[in-house]
View 1 (cartoon, one colour):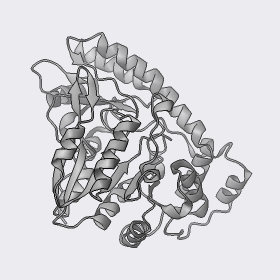
View 2 (cartoon, rainbow, N blue to C red; view 1 turned 135 degrees about the vertical axis):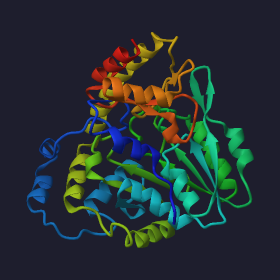
View 3 (cartoon, rainbow, N blue to C red; view 1 turned 90 degrees about the horizontal axis):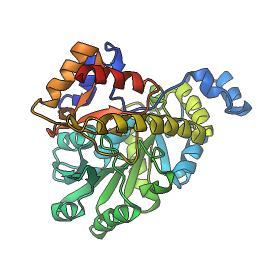
View 4 (cartoon, helix red, strand yellow; view 1 turned 90 degrees about the vertical axis):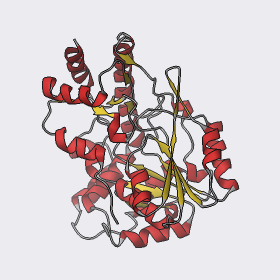
Length: 368
């Protein structure tokens, strides 16, 4: 199996821990372990105090799987715990063969299309459309892109990097299109819970369609990427069994401390999610004002969910040069769209960190 370098992750590896300001992270503000454990309940504290650093259950701690079931509208038997990136890797390996065709909503996190490519699959990028400063879902393109050997459609809502969120009717249409042909649907739901209007939150896809799987995790909505805890949910027991078997070749089981801290996190899940949403709301207002006041330099695309937005740099300067100069001159890291394998002169900003206003101020200094 051969894969290209992961462009986004290599970009972060180059700058994340050397620059002073990050304008483009996708996670929300984190917290310390003690702060997380406070208020999680005496039973969780007992679990933590009695923790032994031994192997854990391969599918995940029963209490953690019970908590995940509450989020996804499934039951514990319909989920398993793993690293979020591992969830993508193992699900693709479980589902796909070299003669399969895969359709991926794009721009996208690279592993969502790179792993299928590495398995020998033909991959079609299904791009969001741009209409008057807004992102739109191109349903006719999806219908026209289907082939006899289409095995998998991959979606991501709320969408990274654009912050796009479809309506329930649009999601239902995607499910109708895939279900008519018996095509599997993989739903990256890492940003679920960060809808800017909670009334527009979509149901988790496996609660709507049997031939599907959803990826969730603690990195984005809950601001806990350092735990490296995620999960796959599905009502397809064959798929979960296959993923569990493949996991024997990767992590085998999850980190014992991370699982207990993950249980503590989901015990306080709505509190942590609202903490993140509050930061996002405040920062999004700052970002919206900043970019709309500079219409001669940028085109603003209003996000509807998640912790990222994807504005466009106007003028003749290439966005990659713009981002490199921002690092050199102001020690602020901005993520160019080239790391998503597009060349639209867009860049990603992340609105989930408490120091966003400082980073935005450095951007203001940079552009003059």
